Figure: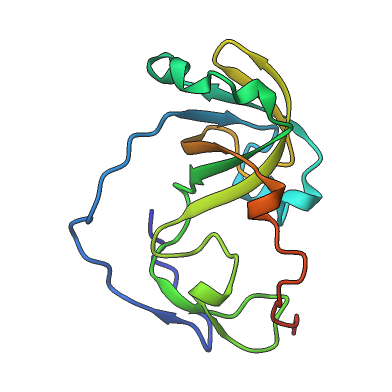
Length: 161
């Protein structure tokens, strides 16, 4: 979905190619208590709510062994997100930033990313905590989280503001 709303001062939008480069197979849906994008937490650390990840039965075998992990990485498609803004002026920043320097859901390929706590596995259902997407969000992938390779405690981040 792309908004027809005009960019704010300092923002830049582009015309996206009419034909995509790749196709995705959604492997399920994420069921959350957030009925709309406006209800969603700003990030996964603010999202203490429990959600259910529903894996399509065709992909059930792919869940073998997932219960061995305390945390998972979920990749999901933010299908309601605007896709044409490549420079944005977020409300929490004083200056514009390029989309690739932001965690905004507004991006050319609106892929959401969350490290979630795995609470339970029941068949093709995963109960998780710490997700920030709206109910019914399409699921792209599930991966195990490895603190030894996925965490960089000394990483440098841009200052807020």
